[in-house]
Image (cartoon, rainbow, N blue to C red; front, side, top):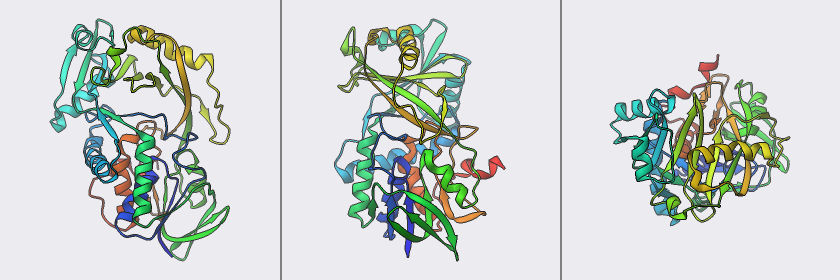
Length: 375
């Protein structure tokens, strides 16, 4: 019997598999596709990592551990996983983005600068915020490369003894005498613990073992602009990653040009979909919405989009994560449902998931992310 089975090998699952294997656990990871793939949430070539976390200060210890784990994985794998660019949170002084970032910074002693609109444009000419806006600049923020990160976790897990079964679908999951059995489309596996990290496909599996998780899947699009008025404005050493709250609780983000254009996307505001029935074609409505925001705040990026892609957010009602084991099914560890802002934490969440699966107390307090809050 396996010590653990990990279902879903995207951001969280690949990290959990790596940490389990690194601790000597007998573990198998399965994924319905061949990770890293473009059908879920873990793709798009770049993801923001930042410490002054506007969403909630309780995330800061988790992201600090994630920084440590990404650095360790980078050393072990020899791959470049992270690029420091700095990060700007831009909005009105009373916006959720600005207030939340400053609150996290104050509580956790994170060094930040507060910039006026004019100061932002002078220091970072790519951005043209409106006069009433201010910016919170965090020097340690930057970019993770998600596909490279997932490959590093999977390669490290395999080297430590894990078995990876790609293109393998979990059809059924059920409890038997204190352990778990997974019926797959090419066999069955028994394990003492199962980590469900299946993102958009998680609700179906959780329902099978009596776990109710109020999750919805949201279709998002991301875009790369390459009609640059001045490419030097967008070089990673001159252009920080940026989140811009342009209306109350409406945010879009911009990332520097790593050779494939300036990435920009709206955060949330997508339509609810079923993971097996997603429109993968990007429409003029998708592109027009982000083009208008880029023209308004980042005009030097131009209007020509060279590439677009669809990804999926799996959202909880409060947009916080789920990291938990429940009394209803104590053999199951639920991770992810990352609500569109989880990738940066994957190296730490995977470590916590491995600790839970091995019946250890997590080294980081994840009580904020329990399922009981939805009871």
